[in-house]
Image (cartoon, rainbow, N blue to C red; front, side, top):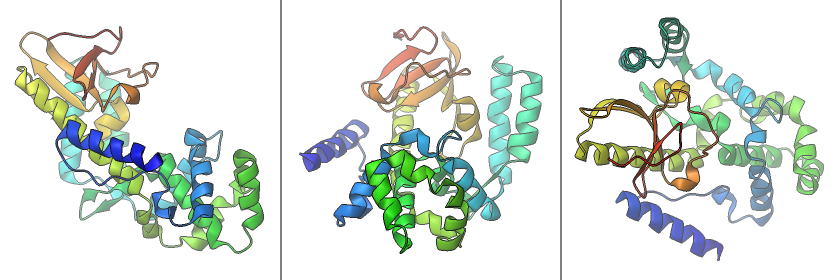
Length: 284
């Protein structure tokens, strides 16, 4: 049944986006090891607790591990982010002060992991719960003294993991001394990012076919998306300029989440436009 569901998901995604994607689900790398796979899945069910400050706080831990290999955004990236921010300012979405500090702190002062000047998926490891679960599973099994912790996690996931929370920075430094070894734990991020990019392009093309012009498109590692929740900025003679958050399907849209700077939430399949404030469907 599990394989049937996964195959259905793969066919669904490929058909709706008309492109092939390399399918991957949480903990697949341990599919040949029942005990590791069971532990990984149990950890992955904790979701955002894994990286929240009130939980295991892995976001901060991973950021600190990656800091030594981060570098400033390149010139092309900086110009792109400044362009997007200025469009938002012209639209009245952000104040002049917000624009100034965004450029100063996020664009000019920001750092990211780049390979050959390009964004790579490890930048999202700190908040991808499936990839974090795989990393934790490997981390635990690398230690010959961790069996009791593993047993504790299988009984009570949160309590078991909290017992090693303060040791996590040291453990990562011991078993993943080279930060680049974390590049191996991005399979889920890569899969989701590929789907997200295809959904974004599908929405852009649908809107362009309806007379919209593209003013800005984000992409992976895009600050306009990460800070302002905006994937696309498009304009239309009748509807004017619109900031857009793209979602693959209805299930991936959390309606109670606030997208402060977003006008429309657009679902890729079936193609549907929602007013972000009223949550009502917009007919073009």
